[in-house]
Length: 396
Ligand code: 13P
Ligand code: SF4
Image 1 (tube, rainbow, N blue to C red):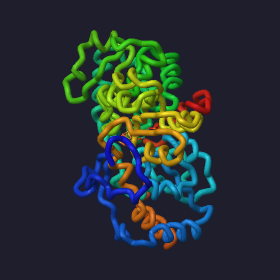
Image 2 (tube, rainbow, N blue to C red):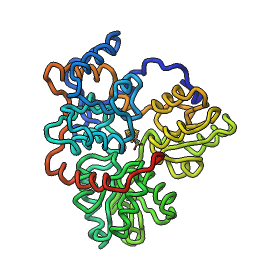
Image 3 (cartoon, rainbow, N blue to C red):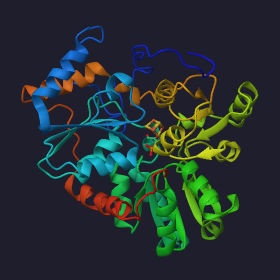
């Protein structure tokens, strides 16, 4: 597909990257899937998933992130952004099995928020997140040592984006901080600045910077970027002491594809278009956009728009393509000319879903995601602080 327009849905392409084989077992991208998957060419896959789901009944609850393929999202009991899905995971104590159609850090959070008797499964262990991989716990511990040496650790509150490993969430909980998502980053930062003078924002520098500048009225100069690959983060003690926001040097490879030129080009191509982007985009892109918000915000904004509206949407392609199909009375285009799926979200496909559910029917739990109890305890502290933030308005 080219030039940001949409045709009728076709079967999703096979995963764009061969992740999994020989992958780093410590990384979010996980390891190769065990077992024999049904072939993607099996014409009965939809029926096989339907049958397995019916047999499992209320024992099963399927969560689907908005970036999932159409072939998978059709089976989700709830779809949502990472905030809504974390709430939903906690809200279904009756389900013995939560099958998380999303990525690894989301399944970890679901495991932390559900009871010990519930099991969380990720249909493909190679569904990780490159952004979450940009913050390894040993790097973050080292960064904290740098803050201690600079004498600022006491006044720094860590806030980690949901898109981080359980160990980073646990670190955040242990150091008095909270998790946030793109739906509630503003509230999380307001909360953090009520607890301390500086915020250490992990791992997405763009969400941190965009929220600080757009929602809290800070300037670029209030923010510094801590580079874990440079001694001392590449910052002097004075820079660290003067900063209000210390941003981890991480980003999303999908949202990082949108540029100021993407925005200018689409305004030329589609006169009268409104540009709506996710806050994981760079500050330059966000500054040029008409609206900025989480995936849930984008969905609600388009649903509320009148017929004839024109949108250029800067977020993952599965969602944008679905929005175009669901709103044929509006003109919805992808912000970039070149397509960009999240390759790890796309790992979850019908063969993996069928394989996971059919194993459950046969009494075999595959690809269970578990977080070690001590890590889970502290990560839960950070997640609970997020869930206790004041409620979100419908279009947040
Ligand atoms: P939200 O689901 O919070 O909008 O985040 C988008 C994302 O990149 C998930 O991986
Ligand atoms: Fe990670 Fe970006 Fe993919 Fe979300 S869209 S899972 S942040 S790489």
